[in-house]
Image (cartoon, rainbow, N blue to C red; front, side):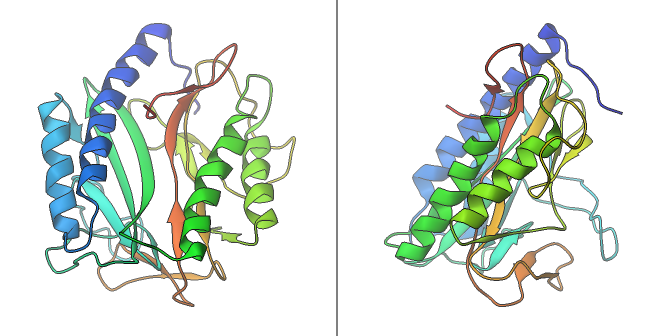
Length: 256
């Protein structure tokens, strides 16, 4: 069931998003060669809690391969890992890597969700383009995230932009509604047809998250039960924000 958020509930989501944005700022300052992904996790965890929120991902159940419980504040996916990567002291970022960070917060019972892909030191032109296209695809979708349009309009905007730039999109994973729960209705695919899916209404909150691949979109889940990586081992990128549909311009909660 799709829930419509009231003005007061949207303000509570904005407070949750403030903690998330503080964590993103803290993470960005730490992206450099020689840093472990566990260090990024610890920095984010501290920033979230210092801002009166809690990490939303801790305690999440794995939706596939055994239902394992997630124990970390963020996901850190490096290079060919596109989503759900687990932070580790053993994963040390090096020059030329790209790392996708996904994080969520709860504050006063309300969720926010966002993700970014960062280059580590000097990265290749292909990686630079991947990161830019993932971000720009999100904004192409936001242009259509208006009352009266449909979820399929958002999906089609992402697909059109990414494929026009020569990359592919994950089909098995998608964005989602968000509010009191991290994952609510409706699903927000990155592939779709215009004029299809639920109609957008003011007060709907959505997490839009283009997940793009340099090569083929075929992926597998690693033995840790969480990390999703490309079968061809080519690079990936990811960009996500929580937005709210309004009577006018969409409101992006998780963007400074």
